[in-house]
Image 1 (cartoon, rainbow, N blue to C red):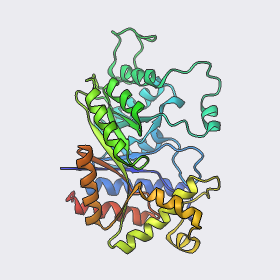
Image 2: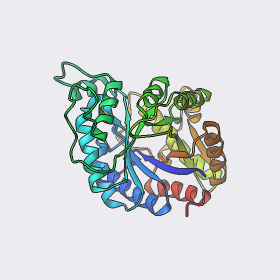
Image 3: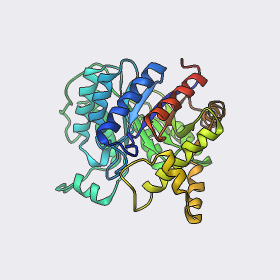
Length: 333
């Protein structure tokens, strides 16, 4: 049976602001909790004006307090920007307050150069990504036996449970690090669709080394998912998504997620249409029945038991409807 989870970007819809966007993320998380989804993760984005969340840890604490059962996580913390020790303490704090409900998803996206420079200002030496992941594992497991540059250091508060560790990736390097360090692996199919991803996930499983945080390989495949009651409704949502993706990947992005009406009115030039067609390969679009069939095909191809949908469509009511339609189709409720 396939488990369903959610990654939310906290989009700022046209006519709204960041305050409203973050409360709509809260509303979506509560709805997902009531529908039986397994996890609700939030992203880390900098200098993306149409996305409200730049600090997943702070939003996670709020969401964990606003929900009851669903696991709350980061999708993800961009580890090269931060101290592994401080990340470990942040997530141990959340684990102490919300036992067995916290996930740490980590990535290494450099973001914009100016963001990277600002977040790393004054650092004379940076640890490799591989070392940072190893450091996190040490701090999560209170390992003071193995040789380490901070061998006696532990992360507080000390808690009996350990947040789940997941490596986010689209390529071979992240999969190798996840396998070598014994963490879970999330493949971002929405960023890199195609057969190559299947090979990357297979390599992760083959190379996996059991660790103190995970005994056997675990995978999640994440998908851009657009669902409507009819094909026509799904296509309307998809066109607004097309426009948002085009804006984000251009140098002239507005500070909002465009509405369905704006997308209809604006349309695309011939040159833009080519980019839209390329991006459509990154999405699953259609009725609940069609989308379920496509999700099942992808889950079977990747041999995974968990799919993380990214219901990044225009409007909170539409986002709630997407996850509700899928929950019903997968018999979560």
